[in-house]
Length: 265
Image 1 (tube, one colour):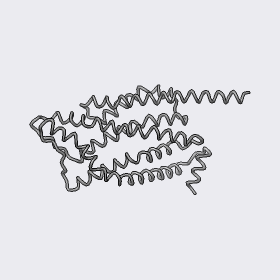
Image 2 (spheres, rainbow, N blue to C red):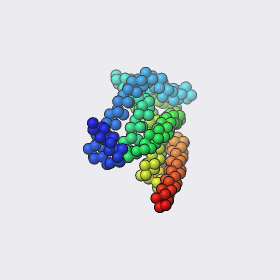
Image 3 (spheres, one colour):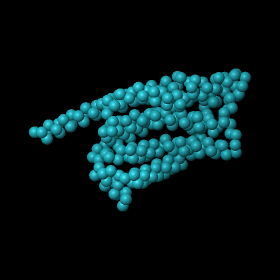
Image 4 (cartoon, rainbow, N blue to C red):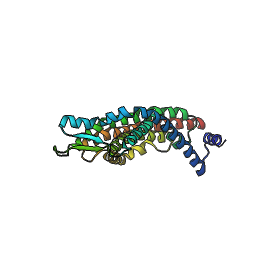
């Protein structure tokens, strides 16, 4: 019944109270959590090949540089914990359509007639961009690992702890995926009238700074090349979002002008 009331308020454009917002947030977080758990079960069966692929850069170091390089499990439960962590991250990736929609639906509750059309557009853009970001993070990972381990003297061994290495790799991959989706939220905010295209353009300097900081945190300080590889497409996506917003603003202005003209006549 309460859920029906929230939908009715949403359709009428009425404001929800703080308590209702919290209930809505709890409901959507529950859906996100359940979807990730279900997807993580599938991720469990994919964890071994994914872990092998993540470990490939370390094996490459051992092969190309003729040195001892390997990933070690330092505790009894670390192998199990590592597989669980990979399964959960795979669950996040697999369940991306669900949690992206839930985040969108919670942040934009005031949409009415065009809600379904905008939802389809958002998911059509957000899901491929998230997966593209994950893929790009995956591509730059080997270069980062090889570069950072190259600072060790040749007579030493590269012995990495499985948990630390996995944490580093997964944070990079997921962070880049999320970063690629953020411009889509700018477009959505423009479509619901929260921000204008000119406003997005005016904030481009701050956007470049934030993107630079984000990519600097996602990559090691010494790996400037990977930082640039990640930052360039994110800056491009920001300006692409601004361009789409400007086009939408002109469309809305023309529509409003026609409406005013029709009312005046």
